[in-house]
Length: 325
Length: 128
Image 1 (spheres, rainbow over the protein chains, first blue to last red):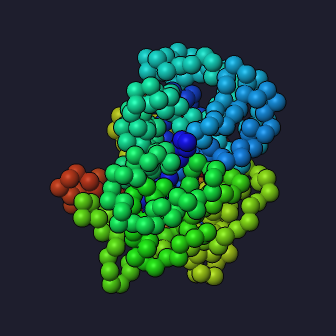
Image 2: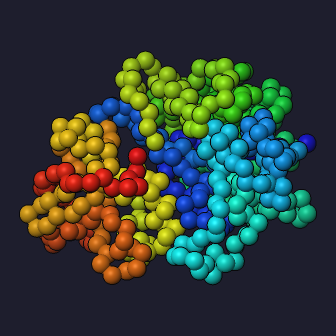
Image 3: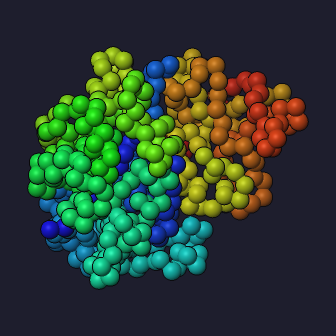
Protein backbone atom coordinates (compact mmCIF):
# COMPACT_ATOMS: atom_id res chain seq x y z
CA UNK A 1 0.00 0.00 0.00
CA UNK A 2 1.06 3.51 -0.69
CA UNK A 3 0.04 6.48 1.36
CA UNK A 4 1.64 9.84 0.69
CA UNK A 5 1.89 12.29 3.55
CA UNK A 6 3.39 15.66 4.28
CA UNK A 7 4.71 16.40 7.71
CA UNK A 8 5.27 19.92 8.91
CA UNK A 9 7.51 20.71 11.82
CA UNK A 10 6.13 23.90 13.33
CA UNK A 11 9.36 24.53 15.21
CA UNK A 12 11.23 24.89 11.97
CA UNK A 13 8.82 26.98 9.94
CA UNK A 14 10.04 30.58 9.84
CA UNK A 15 7.12 31.90 7.82
CA UNK A 16 9.22 32.93 4.82
CA UNK A 17 6.49 32.04 2.29
CA UNK A 18 8.99 30.42 -0.03
CA UNK A 19 6.67 27.42 -0.33
CA UNK A 20 3.84 29.77 -1.26
CA UNK A 21 5.91 31.30 -4.04
CA UNK A 22 7.26 27.93 -5.18
CA UNK A 23 3.75 26.51 -5.42
CA UNK A 24 2.51 29.47 -7.40
CA UNK A 25 5.42 29.08 -9.75
CA UNK A 26 5.14 25.34 -10.18
CA UNK A 27 1.38 25.23 -10.59
CA UNK A 28 0.87 28.58 -12.33
CA UNK A 29 -2.05 29.50 -10.12
CA UNK A 30 -3.79 32.77 -11.01
CA UNK A 31 -3.13 35.95 -9.03
CA UNK A 32 -4.69 35.76 -5.59
CA UNK A 33 -4.99 31.98 -5.63
CA UNK A 34 -2.64 30.16 -3.29
CA UNK A 35 -2.83 26.40 -3.03
CA UNK A 36 -0.11 26.50 -0.42
CA UNK A 37 0.29 29.38 1.99
CA UNK A 38 1.62 30.11 5.44
CA UNK A 39 -0.69 31.67 7.98
CA UNK A 40 0.80 34.27 10.29
CA UNK A 41 -0.96 33.95 13.61
CA UNK A 42 -0.53 35.98 16.75
CA UNK A 43 -1.73 34.89 20.16
CA UNK A 44 -1.42 36.53 23.53
CA UNK A 45 -1.33 40.07 24.76
CA UNK A 46 1.57 42.45 24.95
CA UNK A 47 4.14 41.73 26.32
CA UNK A 48 3.36 38.01 26.42
CA UNK A 49 2.85 37.45 22.71
CA UNK A 50 3.58 34.51 20.51
CA UNK A 51 3.69 34.36 16.76
CA UNK A 52 2.96 31.11 15.00
CA UNK A 53 3.50 30.30 11.36
CA UNK A 54 1.16 27.64 10.11
CA UNK A 55 1.74 26.27 6.60
CA UNK A 56 -1.56 25.47 5.02
CA UNK A 57 -2.82 23.65 1.98
CA UNK A 58 -5.24 20.89 1.14
CA UNK A 59 -4.87 18.44 4.02
CA UNK A 60 -5.82 15.48 1.82
CA UNK A 61 -8.16 14.47 4.63
CA UNK A 62 -8.88 10.91 5.61
CA UNK A 63 -12.61 11.49 5.17
CA UNK A 64 -12.70 14.49 2.88
CA UNK A 65 -15.80 16.63 3.43
CA UNK A 66 -15.28 17.97 -0.09
CA UNK A 67 -15.73 14.50 -1.49
CA UNK A 68 -18.88 13.99 0.51
CA UNK A 69 -20.62 17.07 -0.87
CA UNK A 70 -19.51 16.73 -4.48
CA UNK A 71 -22.60 16.07 -6.60
CA UNK A 72 -20.71 14.80 -9.65
CA UNK A 73 -18.05 12.67 -7.97
CA UNK A 74 -15.38 14.95 -9.39
CA UNK A 75 -13.54 14.89 -6.08
CA UNK A 76 -12.20 11.52 -5.08
CA UNK A 77 -9.85 10.10 -2.54
CA UNK A 78 -7.22 8.12 -4.35
CA UNK A 79 -5.82 4.88 -3.06
CA UNK A 80 -2.47 6.55 -2.41
CA UNK A 81 -4.06 9.15 -0.12
CA UNK A 82 -4.31 12.06 -2.53
CA UNK A 83 -7.57 13.95 -2.82
CA UNK A 84 -7.97 14.58 -6.51
CA UNK A 85 -10.32 16.66 -8.66
CA UNK A 86 -11.40 15.58 -12.10
CA UNK A 87 -11.75 18.91 -13.90
CA UNK A 88 -13.88 17.32 -16.61
CA UNK A 89 -16.46 16.18 -14.08
CA UNK A 90 -16.44 19.31 -11.92
CA UNK A 91 -19.33 21.68 -12.58
CA UNK A 92 -18.02 24.48 -10.38
CA UNK A 93 -20.92 24.37 -7.93
CA UNK A 94 -18.63 25.40 -5.05
CA UNK A 95 -20.17 22.99 -2.55
CA UNK A 96 -16.68 21.74 -1.79
CA UNK A 97 -15.32 25.26 -1.36
CA UNK A 98 -17.86 25.81 1.38
CA UNK A 99 -17.35 22.38 2.91
CA UNK A 100 -13.60 22.53 3.23
CA UNK A 101 -12.71 23.37 6.83
CA UNK A 102 -9.24 24.50 5.78
CA UNK A 103 -10.24 27.06 3.19
CA UNK A 104 -8.08 25.16 0.74
CA UNK A 105 -10.24 25.34 -2.37
CA UNK A 106 -11.00 28.09 -4.79
CA UNK A 107 -12.75 28.69 -8.08
CA UNK A 108 -11.68 31.21 -10.68
CA UNK A 109 -14.37 31.93 -13.23
CA UNK A 110 -12.32 33.78 -15.81
CA UNK A 111 -8.66 33.58 -16.62
CA UNK A 112 -6.63 36.54 -15.52
CA UNK A 113 -2.93 37.12 -15.18
CA UNK A 114 -0.43 39.07 -13.16
CA UNK A 115 -0.38 42.17 -15.32
CA UNK A 116 -3.75 42.20 -17.01
CA UNK A 117 -5.25 40.09 -19.77
CA UNK A 118 -2.03 38.95 -21.37
CA UNK A 119 -0.06 36.20 -19.65
CA UNK A 120 3.65 36.40 -19.01
CA UNK A 121 5.62 33.74 -20.88
CA UNK A 122 5.87 31.71 -17.67
CA UNK A 123 2.15 32.03 -17.07
CA UNK A 124 1.35 31.09 -20.64
CA UNK A 125 3.45 27.98 -20.27
CA UNK A 126 1.69 26.83 -17.12
CA UNK A 127 -1.79 27.98 -18.07
CA UNK A 128 -4.33 25.18 -17.96
CA UNK A 129 -7.70 26.09 -19.52
CA UNK A 130 -9.24 23.07 -17.81
CA UNK A 131 -8.85 24.83 -14.47
CA UNK A 132 -11.11 27.77 -15.33
CA UNK A 133 -14.52 27.76 -13.61
CA UNK A 134 -13.86 24.54 -11.74
CA UNK A 135 -12.79 23.87 -8.20
CA UNK A 136 -9.06 23.64 -7.64
CA UNK A 137 -6.66 23.13 -4.80
CA UNK A 138 -3.30 21.69 -3.86
CA UNK A 139 -2.75 18.45 -5.73
CA UNK A 140 0.40 17.40 -3.86
CA UNK A 141 1.93 18.06 -7.31
CA UNK A 142 0.14 14.99 -8.56
CA UNK A 143 1.84 15.02 -11.96
CA UNK A 144 5.15 14.45 -10.21
CA UNK A 145 3.71 11.68 -8.05
CA UNK A 146 2.27 9.95 -11.08
CA UNK A 147 5.57 10.32 -12.87
CA UNK A 148 7.26 8.54 -9.98
CA UNK A 149 5.16 5.47 -10.64
CA UNK A 150 6.60 5.35 -14.15
CA UNK A 151 10.20 6.28 -13.50
CA UNK A 152 10.58 4.37 -10.26
CA UNK A 153 11.87 7.40 -8.44
CA UNK A 154 10.78 7.91 -4.84
CA UNK A 155 8.65 10.93 -3.87
CA UNK A 156 10.21 12.64 -0.90
CA UNK A 157 13.65 11.36 -1.82
CA UNK A 158 14.09 12.50 -5.40
CA UNK A 159 13.22 16.18 -5.79
CA UNK A 160 11.87 15.83 -9.33
CA UNK A 161 9.00 13.71 -8.00
CA UNK A 162 8.47 15.66 -4.77
CA UNK A 163 5.95 18.51 -4.34
CA UNK A 164 7.37 21.96 -5.08
CA UNK A 165 6.62 23.32 -1.62
CA UNK A 166 8.55 20.57 0.09
CA UNK A 167 11.49 21.00 -2.26
CA UNK A 168 11.59 24.71 -1.61
CA UNK A 169 11.40 24.70 2.19
CA UNK A 170 14.46 26.59 3.39
CA UNK A 171 14.43 25.19 6.90
CA UNK A 172 13.51 21.57 6.27
CA UNK A 173 10.21 22.02 8.06
CA UNK A 174 8.30 20.08 5.45
CA UNK A 175 8.86 16.53 4.42
CA UNK A 176 7.01 14.35 2.01
CA UNK A 177 6.91 10.68 1.40
CA UNK A 178 5.10 7.41 1.32
CA UNK A 179 4.61 6.60 4.95
CA UNK A 180 4.24 2.94 4.17
CA UNK A 181 7.26 2.59 1.93
CA UNK A 182 9.59 0.03 3.51
CA UNK A 183 12.50 1.33 1.44
CA UNK A 184 12.68 4.43 3.56
CA UNK A 185 12.70 2.55 6.81
CA UNK A 186 15.79 0.76 5.76
CA UNK A 187 17.77 3.89 5.01
CA UNK A 188 18.77 4.98 8.50
CA UNK A 189 19.95 2.71 11.25
CA UNK A 190 16.42 1.76 12.03
CA UNK A 191 17.34 -1.22 14.17
CA UNK A 192 18.43 1.13 16.91
CA UNK A 193 14.97 2.58 17.20
CA UNK A 194 12.34 0.08 18.16
CA UNK A 195 9.84 2.90 18.32
CA UNK A 196 9.67 2.91 14.58
CA UNK A 197 7.93 -0.39 14.28
CA UNK A 198 5.69 0.33 17.21
CA UNK A 199 4.59 3.60 15.69
CA UNK A 200 3.84 2.07 12.37
CA UNK A 201 1.75 -0.61 13.94
CA UNK A 202 -0.17 1.81 16.11
CA UNK A 203 -0.85 4.26 13.36
CA UNK A 204 -4.43 4.50 12.38
CA UNK A 205 -5.16 2.87 9.04
CA UNK A 206 -6.12 6.02 7.25
CA UNK A 207 -5.18 9.24 8.99
CA UNK A 208 -5.26 12.58 7.30
CA UNK A 209 -2.32 13.01 5.03
CA UNK A 210 -1.00 16.24 6.43
CA UNK A 211 0.07 16.38 10.02
CA UNK A 212 1.78 18.91 12.16
CA UNK A 213 4.08 18.17 15.00
CA UNK A 214 7.44 18.85 16.47
CA UNK A 215 8.85 15.46 15.70
CA UNK A 216 8.27 12.93 13.07
CA UNK A 217 7.24 10.49 15.70
CA UNK A 218 4.30 12.63 16.59
CA UNK A 219 3.42 13.16 13.00
CA UNK A 220 3.71 9.47 12.30
CA UNK A 221 6.45 9.99 9.75
CA UNK A 222 9.07 8.51 11.97
CA UNK A 223 10.61 6.54 9.15
CA UNK A 224 11.95 9.69 7.57
CA UNK A 225 13.75 10.93 10.63
CA UNK A 226 14.46 8.25 13.17
CA UNK A 227 16.77 10.64 14.94
CA UNK A 228 13.81 12.60 16.12
CA UNK A 229 11.93 9.50 17.14
CA UNK A 230 14.87 8.42 19.22
CA UNK A 231 14.98 11.86 20.75
CA UNK A 232 11.41 11.63 21.87
CA UNK A 233 12.28 8.38 23.55
CA UNK A 234 15.21 10.04 25.27
CA UNK A 235 12.99 12.79 26.53
CA UNK A 236 10.88 10.16 28.19
CA UNK A 237 7.75 10.90 26.25
CA UNK A 238 5.17 8.22 26.58
CA UNK A 239 4.53 6.27 23.47
CA UNK A 240 0.98 5.59 22.51
CA UNK A 241 -2.17 7.34 21.52
CA UNK A 242 -1.28 10.94 22.09
CA UNK A 243 2.04 10.87 20.38
CA UNK A 244 0.65 9.66 17.14
CA UNK A 245 -1.25 11.11 14.36
CA UNK A 246 -4.45 9.38 15.32
CA UNK A 247 -7.39 9.17 13.09
CA UNK A 248 -9.24 12.41 13.48
CA UNK A 249 -11.77 13.86 11.15
CA UNK A 250 -10.04 16.82 9.57
CA UNK A 251 -8.05 17.84 12.60
CA UNK A 252 -4.35 17.11 12.58
CA UNK A 253 -2.51 16.42 15.76
CA UNK A 254 -0.43 19.30 16.97
CA UNK A 255 2.32 19.36 19.48
CA UNK A 256 3.56 22.86 20.01
CA UNK A 257 6.96 23.62 21.37
CA UNK A 258 7.51 26.09 24.12
CA UNK A 259 10.93 26.93 22.76
CA UNK A 260 12.88 26.65 25.99
CA UNK A 261 16.16 24.89 26.40
CA UNK A 262 16.34 21.76 28.42
CA UNK A 263 19.10 21.32 30.92
CA UNK A 264 21.33 18.28 30.70
CA UNK A 265 21.36 16.06 27.70
CA UNK A 266 21.26 17.59 24.29
CA UNK A 267 19.22 15.17 22.21
CA UNK A 268 18.26 17.69 19.58
CA UNK A 269 21.75 18.39 18.41
CA UNK A 270 22.38 16.83 15.06
CA UNK A 271 26.11 16.54 14.39
CA UNK A 272 25.43 16.83 10.68
CA UNK A 273 23.55 20.08 11.14
CA UNK A 274 24.91 22.03 14.09
CA UNK A 275 22.50 24.87 13.44
CA UNK A 276 19.52 22.71 14.38
CA UNK A 277 20.39 23.34 17.99
CA UNK A 278 18.62 26.64 17.73
CA UNK A 279 15.28 25.02 17.07
CA UNK A 280 15.39 22.64 19.95
CA UNK A 281 11.99 22.54 21.57
CA UNK A 282 10.64 21.87 24.97
CA UNK A 283 8.07 19.27 24.06
CA UNK A 284 4.63 19.35 25.54
CA UNK A 285 1.78 17.16 24.52
CA UNK A 286 -1.60 18.30 23.47
CA UNK A 287 -4.75 17.05 25.01
CA UNK A 288 -6.47 14.40 23.04
CA UNK A 289 -9.56 16.06 21.74
CA UNK A 290 -12.60 14.32 20.40
CA UNK A 291 -13.30 14.74 16.76
CA UNK A 292 -15.09 17.96 16.05
CA UNK A 293 -18.35 18.36 14.24
CA UNK A 294 -18.13 19.85 10.80
CA UNK A 295 -16.57 23.23 11.42
CA UNK A 296 -16.78 26.50 9.61
CA UNK A 297 -13.89 27.52 7.45
CA UNK A 298 -10.71 27.96 9.43
CA UNK A 299 -12.20 26.96 12.73
CA UNK A 300 -10.00 23.92 12.55
CA UNK A 301 -7.15 26.26 13.25
CA UNK A 302 -8.87 27.58 16.29
CA UNK A 303 -8.53 24.11 17.76
CA UNK A 304 -4.89 24.01 16.84
CA UNK A 305 -4.35 27.30 18.59
CA UNK A 306 -6.40 26.27 21.58
CA UNK A 307 -4.15 23.28 21.87
CA UNK A 308 -1.10 25.44 21.53
CA UNK A 309 -2.35 27.52 24.42
CA UNK A 310 -3.35 24.64 26.59
CA UNK A 311 0.05 23.03 26.41
CA UNK A 312 1.66 26.20 27.67
CA UNK A 313 -0.23 26.03 30.93
CA UNK A 314 -3.28 27.90 31.98
CA UNK A 315 -2.97 31.64 31.78
CA UNK A 316 0.66 31.79 30.79
CA UNK A 317 0.26 31.69 27.06
CA UNK A 318 -2.68 33.66 25.91
CA UNK A 319 -4.38 35.19 28.92
CA UNK A 320 -7.57 34.45 27.13
CA UNK A 321 -6.89 36.73 24.20
CA UNK A 322 -8.65 35.77 21.01
CA UNK A 323 -6.74 34.14 18.22
CA UNK A 324 -6.19 35.97 15.00
CA UNK A 325 -4.58 35.32 11.69
CA UNK B 1 10.97 39.92 4.53
CA UNK B 2 12.72 41.08 1.42
CA UNK B 3 9.71 41.64 -0.81
CA UNK B 4 9.47 45.34 -0.15
CA UNK B 5 12.84 46.13 -1.63
CA UNK B 6 14.44 46.70 -4.98
CA UNK B 7 13.12 45.13 -8.14
CA UNK B 8 11.03 42.60 -6.24
CA UNK B 9 8.24 45.06 -5.57
CA UNK B 10 7.34 45.13 -9.24
CA UNK B 11 6.71 41.40 -9.28
CA UNK B 12 3.04 40.72 -8.83
CA UNK B 13 3.65 37.29 -7.36
CA UNK B 14 6.01 38.66 -4.75
CA UNK B 15 3.63 41.44 -3.80
CA UNK B 16 0.83 38.93 -3.39
CA UNK B 17 2.83 36.49 -1.35
CA UNK B 18 4.21 39.22 0.90
CA UNK B 19 0.68 40.08 1.96
CA UNK B 20 0.59 36.78 3.81
CA UNK B 21 2.95 38.38 6.28
CA UNK B 22 1.00 40.40 8.75
CA UNK B 23 1.62 44.11 8.47
CA UNK B 24 3.58 43.96 5.27
CA UNK B 25 1.36 46.43 3.50
CA UNK B 26 0.58 48.77 6.37
CA UNK B 27 1.77 50.42 9.54
CA UNK B 28 2.14 47.97 12.39
CA UNK B 29 0.85 49.40 15.63
CA UNK B 30 0.16 48.19 19.13
CA UNK B 31 -3.56 47.52 19.51
CA UNK B 32 -3.89 49.25 22.87
CA UNK B 33 -2.09 52.35 21.69
CA UNK B 34 -4.31 52.42 18.65
CA UNK B 35 -7.41 52.24 20.81
CA UNK B 36 -6.14 55.28 22.72
CA UNK B 37 -5.78 57.19 19.48
CA UNK B 38 -9.16 56.00 18.22
CA UNK B 39 -7.57 54.07 15.39
CA UNK B 40 -9.22 50.86 14.19
CA UNK B 41 -7.84 48.05 12.08
CA UNK B 42 -7.47 49.18 8.49
CA UNK B 43 -7.90 52.89 9.18
CA UNK B 44 -5.77 55.09 7.01
CA UNK B 45 -3.21 56.85 9.17
CA UNK B 46 -0.56 59.48 8.66
CA UNK B 47 2.90 58.95 10.10
CA UNK B 48 4.78 62.26 10.14
CA UNK B 49 8.37 62.99 11.07
CA UNK B 50 10.37 66.20 10.90
CA UNK B 51 11.15 65.61 7.21
CA UNK B 52 7.96 64.21 5.75
CA UNK B 53 4.88 62.08 6.05
CA UNK B 54 3.82 58.67 4.79
CA UNK B 55 0.41 57.06 4.75
CA UNK B 56 -0.87 53.57 5.18
CA UNK B 57 -3.42 51.26 6.74
CA UNK B 58 -3.14 50.61 10.45
CA UNK B 59 -2.38 46.98 11.26
CA UNK B 60 -3.12 46.40 14.91
CA UNK B 61 -1.06 43.75 16.69
CA UNK B 62 -0.07 42.82 20.21
CA UNK B 63 3.51 41.98 19.38
CA UNK B 64 4.95 45.48 19.13
CA UNK B 65 5.88 47.97 21.82
CA UNK B 66 3.09 50.41 22.74
CA UNK B 67 5.36 53.38 21.95
CA UNK B 68 6.59 52.10 18.59
CA UNK B 69 5.30 51.86 15.05
CA UNK B 70 6.82 49.48 12.53
CA UNK B 71 6.89 50.05 8.77
CA UNK B 72 8.40 47.21 6.78
CA UNK B 73 8.57 48.96 3.43
CA UNK B 74 11.62 51.13 2.91
CA UNK B 75 11.48 52.21 -0.67
CA UNK B 76 9.29 54.65 -2.45
CA UNK B 77 8.20 53.84 -5.95
CA UNK B 78 7.25 56.80 -8.06
CA UNK B 79 7.63 55.41 -11.52
CA UNK B 80 7.61 51.65 -11.76
CA UNK B 81 4.38 50.29 -13.17
CA UNK B 82 2.51 48.09 -10.72
CA UNK B 83 4.74 49.03 -7.77
CA UNK B 84 3.71 52.68 -7.79
CA UNK B 85 0.09 51.65 -7.32
CA UNK B 86 0.70 49.45 -4.32
CA UNK B 87 0.03 52.36 -1.97
CA UNK B 88 2.20 51.08 0.82
CA UNK B 89 3.81 53.29 3.43
CA UNK B 90 7.52 53.92 3.05
CA UNK B 91 9.97 54.50 5.83
CA UNK B 92 12.38 56.33 3.54
CA UNK B 93 10.00 59.24 3.26
CA UNK B 94 10.16 59.94 6.97
CA UNK B 95 13.55 58.66 8.15
CA UNK B 96 16.50 60.92 7.30
CA UNK B 97 19.51 59.59 5.43
CA UNK B 98 22.30 59.56 7.93
CA UNK B 99 25.83 58.39 7.30
CA UNK B 100 26.44 58.25 11.04
CA UNK B 101 23.70 55.68 11.41
CA UNK B 102 24.68 53.63 8.37
CA UNK B 103 26.77 50.54 8.90
CA UNK B 104 29.33 48.90 6.64
CA UNK B 105 26.73 46.79 4.89
CA UNK B 106 24.89 49.90 3.77
CA UNK B 107 22.06 49.25 6.15
CA UNK B 108 20.91 52.16 8.18
CA UNK B 109 19.39 52.38 11.60
CA UNK B 110 16.08 53.56 10.26
CA UNK B 111 14.60 55.05 13.36
CA UNK B 112 12.84 58.35 13.60
CA UNK B 113 10.54 60.12 15.99
CA UNK B 114 7.07 60.47 14.54
CA UNK B 115 3.60 61.65 15.24
CA UNK B 116 0.64 59.62 14.12
CA UNK B 117 -2.89 60.65 13.35
CA UNK B 118 -5.94 59.12 11.85
CA UNK B 119 -6.95 60.16 8.37
CA UNK B 120 -10.33 59.99 6.77
CA UNK B 121 -11.20 56.68 5.21
CA UNK B 122 -10.57 53.04 5.53
CA UNK B 123 -8.12 51.20 3.30
CA UNK B 124 -9.50 48.29 1.41
CA UNK B 125 -7.55 45.11 1.44
CA UNK B 126 -5.73 45.87 4.65
CA UNK B 127 -4.23 42.85 6.27
CA UNK B 128 -6.42 41.57 9.07
